[in-house]
Length: 164
Image (cartoon, rainbow, N blue to C red; front, side, top):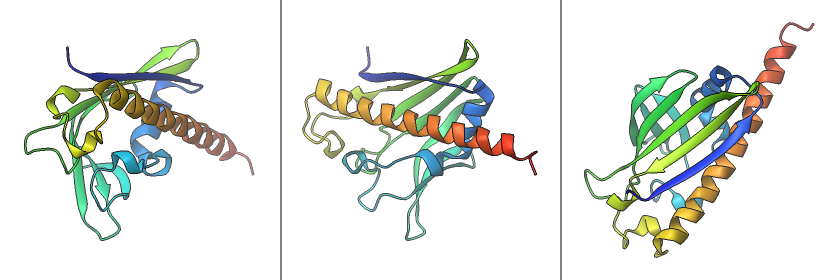
């Protein structure tokens, strides 16, 4: 079995609303973690565009994090994930599921394939595998909390649009 990270969070919104916030507002809720920067020049602004997840750097350069493999609005999103330090052809994979649960959405992130990244790769910072996966999982939990906050802000904005 591949080394993986698995985190989930329930958000009080429909699967479609959470999916839309995840992909459409990623530049607003994503919080960079200097420990897990994509490039030495990070952080930039994250965006899904042209079938891929990218980081737009202040210099204007664009780093492709990974290509989108599955795009099922309100249900599932799968994309590749690589950092600049990964060897050519090496990448991990992120699957995000959006499941309706009791009037809310359970967002589940599975970040898998870490066995493909050698233990001595700079992206792992010398952490033993279990510690690295735990630290990376903590970051994903914080990212999902940011997504929840952004989704709630989006909903409040949409609710207020008809008020005037």
